[in-house]
Length: 323
Ligand code: UDP
Image: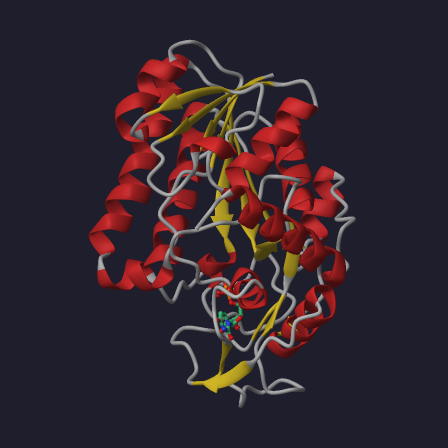
């Protein structure tokens, strides 16, 4: 297929673009490089640098079989302080993309949605029919886009899939996570191991969990990419499918830090800190629907493997990129 990957210079977009190229698809990456990196665009992709809202129409006019839509603003804290950036950058921009797809008859869409659409779920593991009550603006904008996609599928026959990611981690060779502003647990802990940080803060040790720290479902980015390719292939015209993606097992913040210690051989000092606003105690996915309908099976679910792949990437990146 001929596929447009928006945000293909970012972490998830670059890994999925690499998987597409490796499986014989023709890929165009569209990215404004606001948070992505030019050297993260995989070999074999054509790269278009540009603002998505302004450029989508001209690019899609070339004719595509599908779009993988990753480009978004994704910092929860910033979304609360500057909501207009998220309503504009995520919702308005996505509608411009969907309109360009409609104009040029692009039949398939896979959208990068998130577990943040569920807010603080009452039940675990979280199924797709859990109430979607986001607790932050980032999640609200992603949910609004999901609603828009449902109505485009119904009205215009778009073949669409939203993938709601839980905690994505790990790397695909030289494609991995490197954000200018890092908020995610595993990269932060690994930055302690490389000496970029003194210690990691544990956001709350009094949660109602066995060791008092929050539990999350970490999914390897390669398993996530597999799901995108399956979603692209299996999309049905007029249907908007929504799938939760996780490994199905929860690990506490302490367990993650302990795994990072054993993988890196570094002591990794960890200090108690206040709870972070909006954090649910436990967030674990039920991915039964993705397994049943897409035939998806996550195969890199071992947390040591996930951390090890992230660590290999982090170390390689330190030696190739002088700080
Ligand atoms: N966390 C932490 N210290 C950090 C970063 C994260 O204790 O420096 C915790 C956070 O409170 C959450 C878990 O690690 O319970 C995963 O957080 P992350 O930001 O990686 O992902 P989220 O679950 O918020 O999407």
